[in-house]
Image 1 (tube, helix red, strand yellow):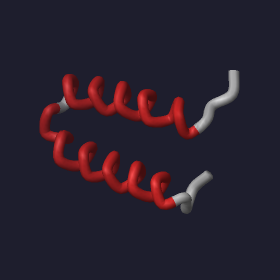
Image 2 (cartoon, one colour):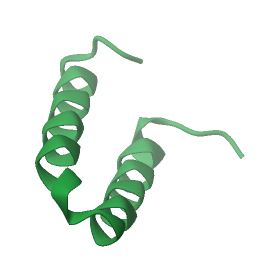
Image 3 (tube, helix red, strand yellow):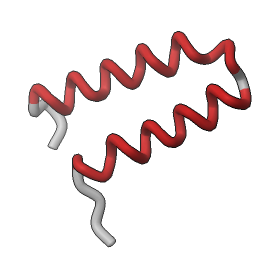
Image 4 (tube, one colour):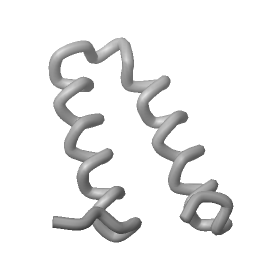
Length: 47
């Protein structure tokens, strides 16, 4: 199985959701990191 950008977003979302359930205080950091990663991928800086 090969991972592409299309597979990366759902995997990150799933991991973030699990972390938020375990440690709700991480919500702000997880959302910020997620948005930064999606923005960088959307700009094409990471292939």
